[in-house]
Image (cartoon, rainbow, N blue to C red; front, side, top):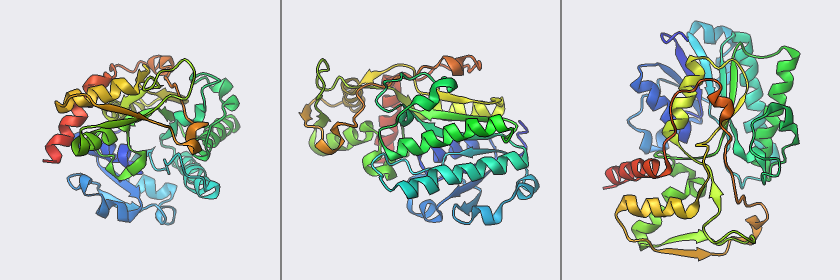
Length: 329
């Protein structure tokens, strides 16, 4: 990739997007940042980040064409913009923000002949009955548990179909993010990682509340997820851009499922506080949609020769908590 050019980053004021832009600052890569304009002003946790030229997501396509991208020397689009609220049930809103917007960016990258990298989601795997294998031949079988996951699934399937038609960017890669955690997610509220919620609860009460298990054979707190540190996600995105990865949809997790107990105990330890955990009933309204296990199969990304090991849960939580403690003193 021509490092003299710019990267166009959507969702730049969001969690992963802002951390990616921050990494671009460190690497001296100029960016054009796309998101809802108000987010750049209201999310003061990002005040130290240089977002370069800021473009409102609603006016972006009026301002940018394939010719504009070439004139601006944009060398790739990194699309992190989406509604990530798994409890959002406005299907039309999700279709507009997560599906149609992404299709338009794909077509723009295709016309501009530049790589396109985008965020999919492990929510596409639903309850995991079909496993967590990023095999494109079986992706059509996946059954997400909520409209958010379906919107991500719909784009993945659309992208694969467009590729078969010959309508695709010169290089493209989608990443099924598993449970991403790390500094900069405060604005996500209830959708922020359990680590941030645990940190807040411990500071206020010295206690963390976790959902009980409502599934036979799984003890309370032993529900497992693949937790992946945001720093690792950022590294993979840069790898995909710089290589560039020629094509395909890839899992992006740590590759190792860990329990919520592991996560919370690591948080207590990083904070230097005694463990104090209480189990509460999982709300009835989400109980039948609750995932008890996720674990990314990472062979496919490994075959692309991705070189870096993934951060352990304990190390990632330690880094995250240390950053929170420094910035909240």
